[in-house]
Image 1 (tube, rainbow, N blue to C red):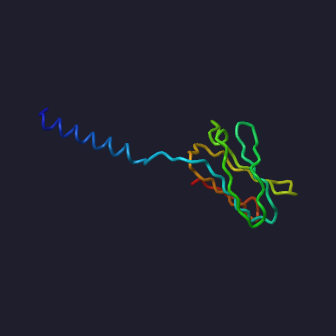
Image 2: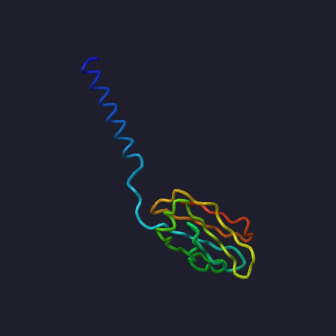
Image 3: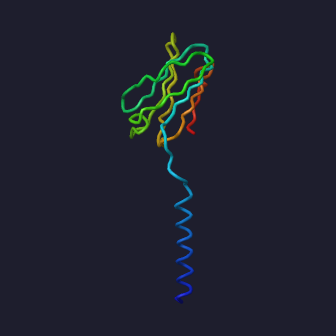
Length: 124
């Protein structure tokens, strides 16, 4: 191989590595936030579940929203975490699937629907 070819390959590899290193952007900071919007006719209690433990975050009244800071030990749990919505005075509730791979600075939005089975969530 000629020296010129080696330098061209080296320059190409350096450019490739540099683009990979910056593609993800800086690491996120801040807490993980849980935001619950309640469109159900009943007030709801909100819990986060992880590692077999349940932590009550608070109550969200009908037609209201609330934001909570999720404790680190919950969102860092190896098995992921879940959000449980329990309407006050009802025997049924809603529990999300396991939410895995949550990163610092993310927000988990839960929209409690009028029909509880249509409740949905997203991680942003």
